Image (cartoon, rainbow, N blue to C red):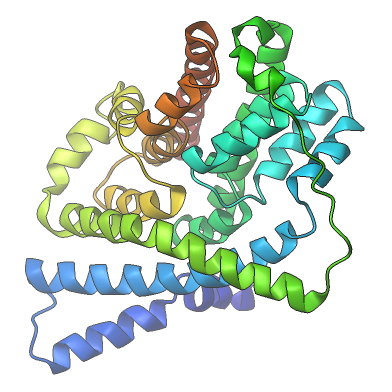
Length: 332
């Protein structure tokens, strides 16, 4: 148990790093108890911690992903049917460290290749909402129990959402050009370990360059919330006294555009200010899955009715997950 706690505190949460940064700032004469000093410490600690974890995890996930190019993934998914294919598609989404906008081209490719629409939507929901890299970052903030519960419930939303779309037979509401796009076989000869490492390095560099600006914004917002927003405000709006806190968090999260790496610092700050756990997690899910830019992109591929069905299913699922976590937080 002590070993596990050490891994949680010193490896994932990197508390040693926070102490190191605090000591360095104190040596420079900065008062860490002040709002400015506390904000700077929070910002530097979270930026460095997330950058380290992001690079390591994206490299590992990209190496794994090198074994599953889109064509191979399509062939694997074609071997399964019904809910099994939805489960596999949702799991496949966990090894694609993409934001919602980056997931849509793959969704279009899978759909044009002839995969069932519900299966492709299971992938589309799970890919931005949950991935293996985010699991470790979530563990660094919320602990392993909450992190695993978040991932599992995210997968449940993806599987049920895709299955419902499949049952509703929404194929007529996909834009016609999607089905007329030619699918190209991208099967490639066997690649070496060196090739996979090179691919993982390139993916790590590319993803980091895309994600890091949003991480800086997210950490900046988190630092402001953590040190400048009165605790009473957060508790009033997102705490136990507001039964509509989950719904409000989802509404606020939808217009934003960020991936899960960028939302974690904001969630961490909100939680420290007294926001309910389920409300914070619902906010994260809404930001990563239902951002306005991704919905605009998705509208280019599907017709309005299917888009609203997708939004409705995800919103209901996210709200239910939020209230479930809040209930468990009160009970436990």
